[in-house]
Length: 199
Image 1 (cartoon, rainbow, N blue to C red):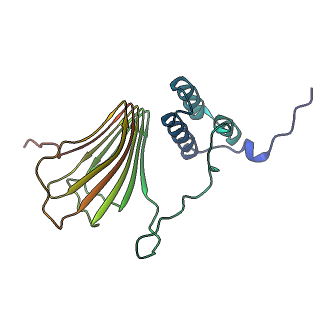
Image 2 (image 1 turned 45 degrees about the vertical axis):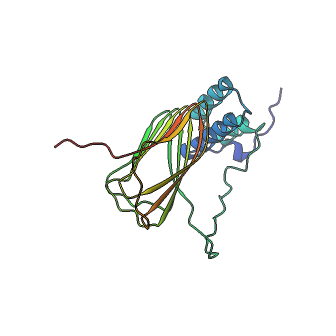
Image 3 (image 1 turned 180 degrees about the horizontal axis):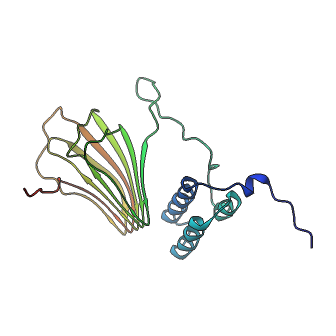
């Protein structure tokens, strides 16, 4: 039996980033109820093992999705100036963290799928009046350590999970604002004071 010719694009080798994008899409589909947990586990495992774009495409061909190479449109501020794309922190079956002195962006996406994300703000300065963190936790956790003087606005949903702030007191007016938008499914997003240090 003669085999059908394959598209060259289907045989193109994939990168780790492309695998992560597919796993993120599968996680979103699971959160929306399009996939069962067993289906998610099977497809995510296959995505990590995929070698070609054709193998990846077959894992999402029954799901609504944009083409993997499509760029995320830049948002515009109230002044009409295009805002830069958000930085990303992704933990899939593992741990990722930002700590120490690091440049805090105006927008950050933190996604934890069967993993753990830590974002520590206590040792850095916040150069923006408003910092927005899109925190997604699917069978994982996102923990954000916030120093005193920062106002936190925590919004979003938590299904079979939790979103909470463990901060105490009221931030003074005029200080930086941290907006945390959550999507939680069988996971947690927690905002808490910095870890206590022992000298």
